[in-house]
Length: 133
Image 1 (cartoon, rainbow, N blue to C red):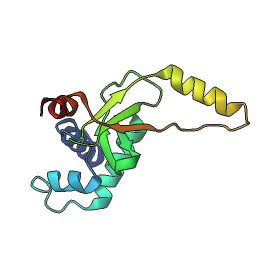
Image 2: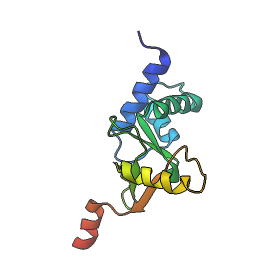
Image 3: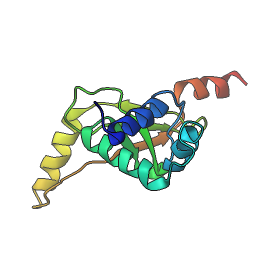
Image 4: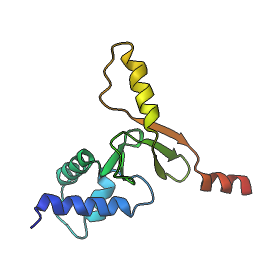
């Protein structure tokens, strides 16, 4: 039998998986309000923290929001491509970049614990729309 926390985590993850863009904790809270009318922000934040720790969810730092992980088979950070037009966020993998970055920083004695690489721009769909007009 699943705990209340596990149930809430699965609900939060479902909301993120069905979203077209990154969602803030308050966006998630509103999406769950019909099913859980008394839900409070700390419940969502605890669920997001647990899901992030498990690697099921990524925090998009520059947007203060979250997306569901699209590849659960990696053990390294992802590069997030963020469309400034439509808000879509795409997860990309490039483990060598992170190895190179850690190696470069390590030469100065810096011990990297976490990598966050987010690239803002325009996705292919929005770029095609801009070029069509």
